[in-house]
Length: 84
Image (tube, rainbow, N blue to C red; front, side, top):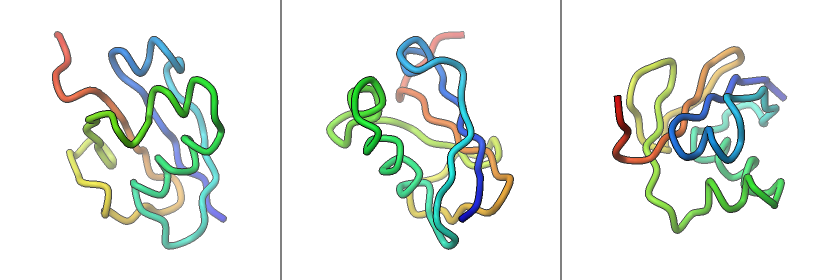
């Protein structure tokens, strides 16, 4: 298992707070991090649901959900359009 830092922005931040640490299996991807969070149910399942269009970033660089995560990485989730 490895721990990654997850940050949320815009409406997702309103639903889930600023962020949290998440443990995932070695060799996981950004999509796997999202799935672990969705599996928690409740607000996580609603805010990060697969039917919702979300953008993701890995270590502050936009990425798709196939990007591999490593111990200590930062994963961020946010809606496609955010205000400044």
